[in-house]
Length: 270
Image (cartoon, rainbow, N blue to C red; front, side, top):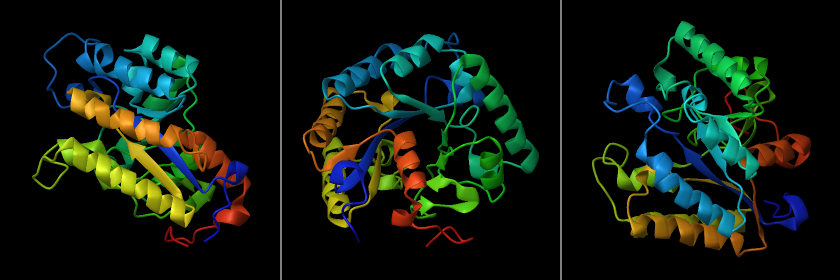
């Protein structure tokens, strides 16, 4: 595989991403007994993560539930001002794969109406739960969404309906290590997250590929966990052979250079 497919002859492209803004999912599941707009991650963990991103001059993609756009407009504005991308993560983090056709269409409508009102242009989508439905491809195309970031079952490249696929791997997600329900009933140490991601960065560089790293602000509840985020960001920022860019920019590059990345078949794989 060629290692010169990326801008400035970079050997790999990597996006640092975040998911979940505030209490959207907790409200959906009737698990939020506090005033709306008071999620502690907004005042505690997220500012520290944004400071780390600024220190290392890294622009991230934040997959935000559309419900949260009107609840935390100051956060959305601040993210945009700092050059971070706001992408879509459903209406209230509804598990995407389990949605009926009508519920999926309703989420699209409510979400994109809210985005328009908030002055946000959703160019990318990460389905809550990681998986999309067959009908999602056409709906994404209708809304002009450039890319989708599902769990790595669709492969990487230009997918169905011309939508670029930028997959993520569960083991490059902090929730795999820090949340029992996502880690197969096991809670792991932050160092395991760091070690796996660091090894994956080297693998992607060797292969000339793409990697999406995912950290949830609400999970950064200790100095050790925040330290792992800082180590990862420092690793990305300190390597001139890595193109570290928001997902939207990576998707734009892939779409403009289809000949370098290939078109997938109907099954989603090359």
